[in-house]
Length: 139
Image 1 (tube, one colour):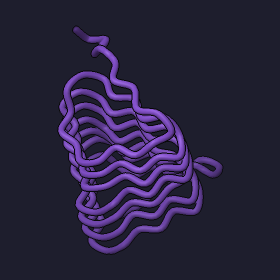
Image 2 (cartoon, helix red, strand yellow):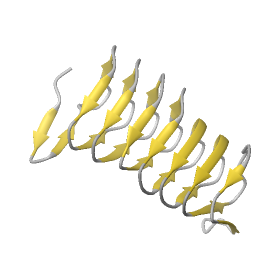
Image 3 (cartoon, one colour):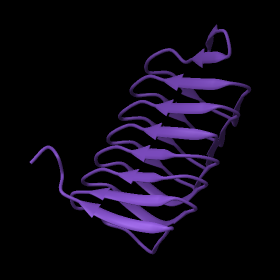
């Protein structure tokens, strides 16, 4: 698949799929319905679009995981991560804050920052400096 570049930001075409492992030396914007059949490693910030999937683990500096996204392995983030509605992730290790939106299915979450939970989520152990459960702003 061809990946477009704008400075240190790389952009995948909508609806693409990547058969092997992917390593990006910069920021990575992934549009909706993009699929990775291996590992995804991003040196910078990751924006993973809705309805996308990663079969194995994800490593990046910070991340926004789109709605209805499925990740098969752990997500390791050096900074902050936001996980949007109905995403499925088995494990998060974060150096910063974690935001979990309604409907997220998550295994364990380990964070050096605060874990914010909006609405109802399914989770394993939540280990962070603080865990704050907040009302879903969409209700």
